[in-house]
Length: 456
Ligand SMILES: [Mn+2]
Picture 1: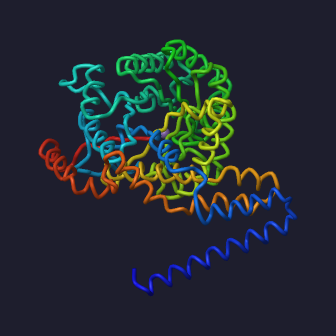
Picture 2: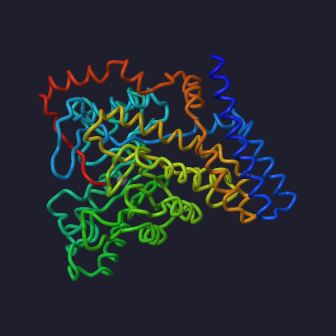
Picture 3: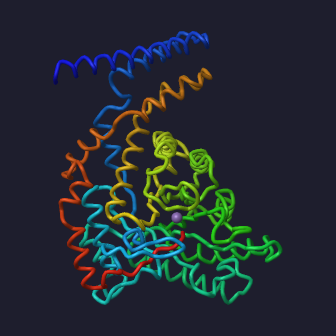
């Protein structure tokens, strides 16, 4: 290190520590804190300067438990509601999607499962059947995750699926769901992930209550077909494609439905499915407290259900969501929230119309690792003490300290300990996989690979 650099760093260090000391002293004196609070203030200051609240081996052990499912459709071509764009590297067949998912897992170590979408995904002739699909996935180092029924594209579903006024359409939707349960059994998947486009577009179009009752009756038949170790992951979304009302619009509607069904029915939070400004971390905390949070679809959004790369728009929100999850995880088996947090199915749900699909998936994996690592670094004892003392700025500073920690060196070390390149994107680019599959797929499909994707 050059002498000038040393003094610049020292100056920054002194300035930062002085500012924090001053803030803490002001906070402590303003609120006339008790001696125990002062101890906490001092401890917090000490933590800011030295060790983190969690020791390294515990931290690494926790980080090694993190797993997220990738969506098969995230490796396919994509576009917008206005058009689909050629992406010559995009996977078309299920074989190609699973192979790509295996590569994303190889470079990150945290993406061991792939969620399927039926009927977008189907066994290729070489796979023969669904057991063959699971075997093929295993050859690529991944397993089959949640099975997603699709009851929003067939013309029969124009006016709904489980909520449709006609019994014939509801029966058709149920039959498709039951087929998905069979696929889950054949592929050793434990989750049926549900999203409905059901809703109305104009006042008076249909009866809200009758639609709700039709939906519940259909769910009850589906629930009865589940294996004992399977779960329903019920997603909600407040609008789109229906513009007047949506039958499962929010976490309250989904929770009420799940409570009527039983413990195998849980709510899935898709981070892109809320009105702008909604406090998602509060929803997460509430669902944890009820023991009914079953899964996540992570993605980023700026305006609507944008399905952008995780962490690209508001990484602080992602951190605050993970902060609630870690808080519950730390309670272990002792509480409803702790038990709930231990069983959550984490998934991405995003489309990549403008990026290389595998690179965007790797970026998402890194984003959730960073958010989880930062949440693990929150000094929960200090946070509790500040909260107890109604010390608002003190509590906020605890979160800021964790959020502003550069966890990238720690994650690079974690990856090296797992035998993974510390920089996954660079390693993926060096591997030549993108060039290889691009030339293979152009040869197979032409330069305009078929685009898939959709809303979910
Ligand atoms: Mn989703």
